[in-house]
Amino acid sequence: MNDKYLTVTALTRYLKYKIESDSNLRTVYLKGEISNFKAHSTGHFYFSIKDENSIIKAIMFKSNASKLNFIPTEGMKVLVTGSISVYPQGGTYQIYVEDLIEDGVGNLYIAFEKLKEKLSKEGLFDKKYKKQIPKIPEKIGIVTAPTGAAVKDIISTIRRRFPYAETYLFPALVQGENAHLDIIKKVSQAESYNLDVLIVGRGGGSFEDMNCFNNEELARLIFSLNTPVISAVGHEIDYTIIDFVADLRAPTPTGAAEMAVPNVADVIAGINQYKIRLQESIKKKVKMNSLKLDALKNSFVIKNPMLMYNVKTQNLDNLIENLNKAMLNKIDKTKLRLNEIKNNYVLKNPDLLYKKHIDKLNNIIEKLELLNPISMLKKGYSLTYINDKVISSISDVKENDEINVRLSDGYINAKVEKVGDLDGKKD
Amino acid sequence: MEKKIKFEEKMKNLESIINDLENGEIDLDESIDKYTKAMALVKECDSELKSVEEQVSKLVTESGEIKDFEIDE
Image (cartoon, rainbow over all chains, first blue to last red; front, side, top):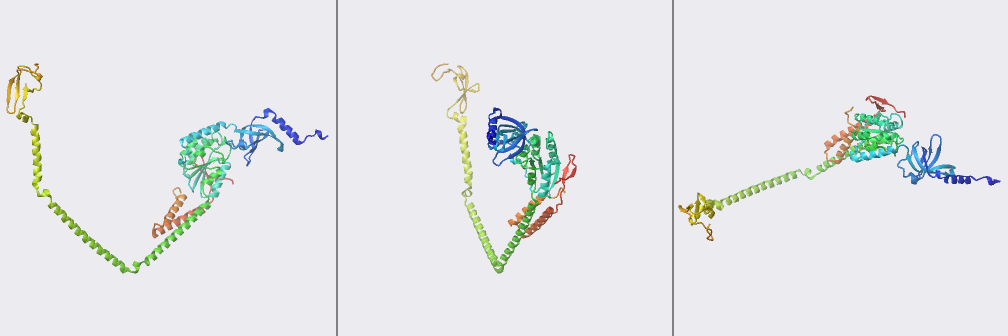
């Protein structure tokens, strides 16, 4: 009679079989909102996906979860790919998630990545442009929403750590379509308040909520500021464009306040340390000086003052002797030089200088003589002219031409009888 | 108020005076001068920090008006 009753295990196994054999449930595309999210220490994610009326449990194993480039958060709208099965020990059916993407933010992600790459290429994120955050700021600006946890966290953390600092809130919209415009306006307003550091941020939220910080104009504005900027958007895992362009990125608003100001106790301890070092160094100085004084008092010279006189006297003697030696030396050298000059050969034979010039002149005259054409004529050469032009070729004359022959001592007028070349051929 | 020497500036001054003193190249007269100056700075910094009254945060409106801003903790 017990035969018709099933064990729970048997029923569950049957349901599991039924569900797993349904091909429609093998690959399911599901959209909904994340709820009860838990990241287990093993790396698996446990959560639920729900809409207004229904809910389904979900598990994402580490092998798939580790591939996600974001951490799912409560209320996040997601697109899920997975398969349905039964978990017997829990008595539940659930979806085994293979992939998860944020619904509706795909395009925002792409735009974010593009802007990040563009600004990075331009060098806006370069370390060399990062300004130093002052160690002990006195005026701190905050651009965030005037309500909510972020502003409270920042202000209360600053007051607790370093009440000396003044805080100036520039209230801004940090969510919604035109939030970036308001943030830009408040950041540029803050720049003119001579602040030591400016915190810009908001509390956690979805990627869409934080998208107002992924704005190019805002990024360029922050890059151009003279005031050092700490970015403080969302949680540790949230990154926005201003996190890269800011001089310092804080994981959270509270973190930003901790980075902005020192702990007052540490500063006071530092001042005490200075005090101790000051006292030590002056003590050391005085001690060193008194040691020096003692050493002087006990020095040999102070104790035997006559010695000092003796030493000086000896020095003086040395100096006088050196001076004498130097003077004698100088006189000897000068004498030597005078003798050298007296014995100079040219000085002794001044006509040598004169004769050299006459010889040179004669030489030149002789050379010039050789070049004179008249001297050639003296040797028996002659020059023959026709009509005052020198004849250099037989072609210059013909028979019966009157020619003129120039000799060294006069000339001959003559008439050409015959013209012929060297072979005897007649023209 | 705007032109007063910044706290961090004073601390830097202190640090550099102390370094000078510790390096020991200066003579006793100058050392004592520096010591006196540094001690005055120490007192000034110390009392500035300790005498801070409860600060009220300020809110700067768009028109530049500065108001007190209270957070409920």
